[in-house]
Image (cartoon, rainbow, N blue to C red; front, side, top):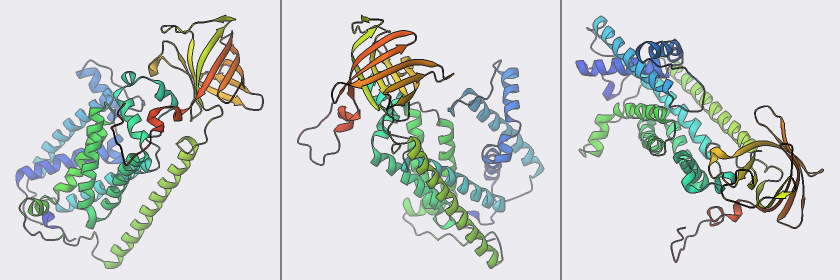
Length: 419
């Protein structure tokens, strides 16, 4: 197997050998599917109980920065350090690990490239960051969480979201081939560093995983550090990478390349097809739900009593919202942040002009309302809500009624439009 300049069979110094052993073991227990999942839940729970007097157990929550995740990183570092000591004693006479480094590089390229494709295509097809929900447009800016603010401003712009996704897709595709590995690693490092800084700046709970992808990108860049340093810093010529092939037989290498091309094309096509279908089901291109819109309550009649719109009233409704994804949200006069909203699963019969609001937990019936239009924008809802009679006089709005959504793009601005 031929090697690149930085993988030449020269003797490694002690520090380089120790660093390689540590990084190799940590990668093995972190990103290799078999080793990364063995015994860790039991070990983490045991360590939390015996050393930290704290119960730590895995629980799926959508966050990658749970207490369990931090304990997992700490224990993997400790295990890697212990393994490095043992490895260094047992294998102290070995001078290099060129072949092992070669296969580690190959695995990291595909691992990193895979996740760049996954996240990149989710941005290109706009699944990760969709257009702001109607309820998000009603929540005051100061009541948004940092993550909610980030999701809103990124999802608002199709151009920015798709561009950032294309950068990730380009980096992932370049990493799959050794001749474009360095360029892919450089793009990946820049893109993932930006993602990591956003996660840190806006409290987005994927900090650990995004940092991992930054480190893996830096590792691939480091394999060519001499060539890059000569070109960008010392302004010296640099030798190209030497051809590297895993097999000595030409037919075996050609077969490998063909199989790899088919596998990459198939995986890419499947991801693209699946994301397009998902977007049509629940993304920006999904059909809008019946009654989609914001219904601002002008008059609220509960049990035949008209309730005045007092700001701190938690009973009187302020808005009834039917979201794009099939979610009904009730804002009362007091609720101005997301945690105080009431969410229901709506079932709308447009022929009967009937709306059922169901509890998300047990699908029990909460409200049964009938509606009719008095003109193009005014609607009246009448029925039962939690065993109380209810009548609403409303005016319908949608996203086009908000400056954020109707301002659009202007090449020429005689004055800044900063509101």
